[in-house]
Image (cartoon, rainbow over all chains, first blue to last red; front, side, top):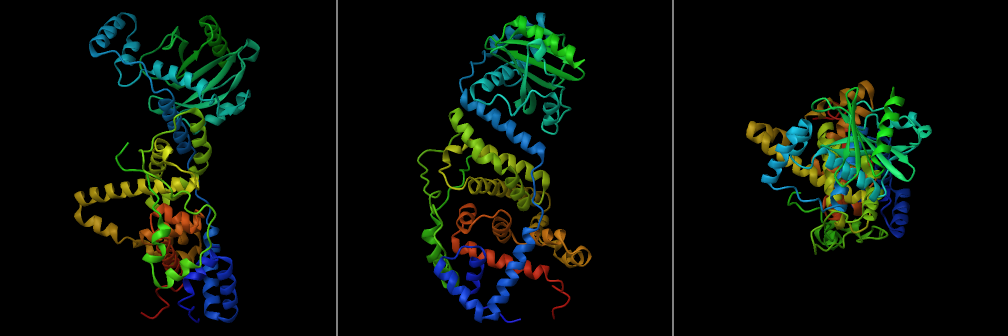
Length: 254
Length: 230
């Protein structure tokens, strides 16, 4: 096998890579007609290129894509709504916590926790879903589409997402959201012109009886637990409507 | 966010010809002018890059960069050879990309992202090397001169003559050569973009690519070590 011309070798690569300008490319092509060494070399490079092109493409794991999506959603929330209400000072915090012990042990855990409480995070997530034109990742009213879509994106068995159109709560779709440092499922329903975000997380903390209350920011929030999952519905609809939503959902979920 | 700045693309064309004289320098002169050449390189570090500030910008980030999740992961995997590290690197790169999105000044978004993946990888590799040196001073040196797998390449070739051997041969390439080859052949970046990503002059990119290909061809030759006289 004859060797390529030393001064042409770098050009052979550039020709293969489509990087030579027209004049140099045609000059080199003319040279290749008369120089077996360079022609052979180009052939070997082309063969290598073809072999490399046959390598099956590497794809990112779905779970990674889910994490990246969720992370960006969370970062986006931080930048679009930088003004989070100031957290109470330590004294006020303890006072509040003390008062709360009488009311609910689980709420206290949320307040003493580092960072924003889960209700605060979910209220933020609700606001953001309305603000950033990012209500759903998968728009559909088909419950058979929403559930599998979450599969592999959230790291826990995805919830059923029944369409409650007949009860006045049409299913809009699903969205990947982010709370407590992990991707979570958000199922989106509509009540007339109001949006209902139903956040679903793996159950955590003591048993929770269904309860209805105002979420931070004055939204209505209802919370319940079912088969190892915690459900948090947040909406700007009337609290009563959210209550019927909860009932309709539990009935449909069986 | 760490103090490390996002990759700044140096005006490589200034140094390309002068820094690499001789044959490569001549070849650099023969390259075509790529459309938009240097556009991405015009970056002034006037203010530190920050995250997108409004929903439209966030949407732009998603549209421009989310399509390259597979590429970011694949590049991180080629660099680190460690699937779980590659996931972390890809995620970290997206976080840095988002937080520094105002520093993106047009140009190929994939090249911008891969440059960040590379920065994350260098940080990771540095940390790992320091850790290895602390635990076992010799381990780091061994990790340095790497490709222990090379010997098994030909056996694999004989048996299944395929993908595995090729991957092994790529992994066996020394670092800068591997990066350059992967960016060209697998990520389909052009010379200018590879120069941006790796922070090397275009002449260096060309000579690394030529050497990487020569090494690969040699490693994949069926009789790479046995057939040839010692």
